[in-house]
Length: 174
Image 1 (cartoon, rainbow, N blue to C red):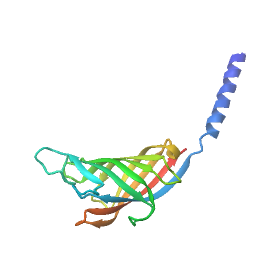
Image 2: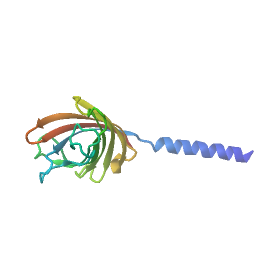
Image 3: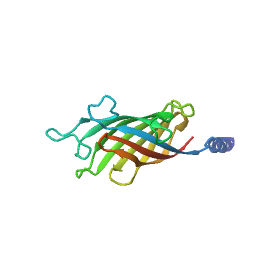
Image 4: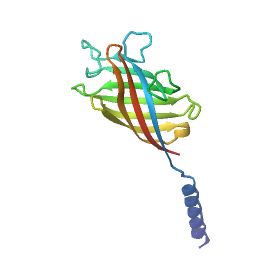
């Protein structure tokens, strides 16, 4: 009879411990990605690295794989305070060229979140005004992250192949 009572006490204590230790937080961030897609330019931050043989490696060509390392700033101004980097890759995944599969890590370098990351993944419908992907993981201050992020083209200069992408992130974490 003592063993079942001891087991019940242990289960109750563990439940209380787990409930008290789960302070789920929600953080909302607005970040600005400074994207330079000028292939061959010394300052390019997004470049195609693979594609279908015999086809042009373009943004709308199925199978084209880009790698990216965009500066992330606090405001749309490219000279504003740097928050971190958007590092990862995306591939044109729709046969019609309309969708990209995005796999990007937001790597924070600012004082508040330095060393922490948020991982984004999902299909981005690249010609829609607002594109949404999932927050699938995080590290540091964003450990066990989950949530979503939206991308909006804030500024586009086609001749310079320069754009500013606003990334709004809503993330739950511990």
